[in-house]
Image (cartoon, rainbow, N blue to C red; front, side, top):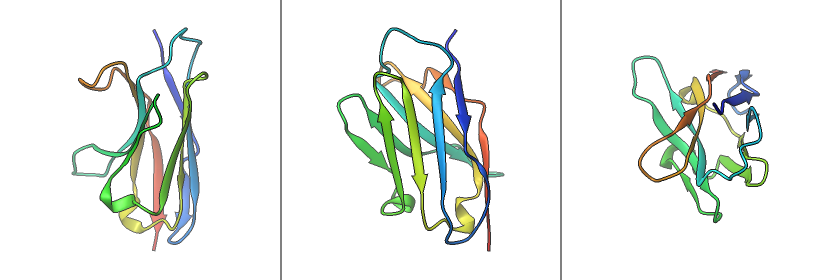
Length: 118
């Protein structure tokens, strides 16, 4: 069973930066078709923040465009999220996700808390 391990969350002041990283717990022998970051704030649904495909296509939520940047290493099945100019509304638990098809996330990380103070 493949597990995704996340790191890099924490507490930061508004305007600050954080970098999240996610890696597969073991070699899979294949590259995930897509990897991405999702977040869930209290009382809200989990939403896609950013994703990247093996082909290099990236997608961002409108609320983070221009502030966040996703990058991945296909061979190592790792994905990172550089978050700049953080805002209090970015506060949430951030989850790494990976998938083989476009029909949903096949693997989830355990989540890492990001808290942005005003």
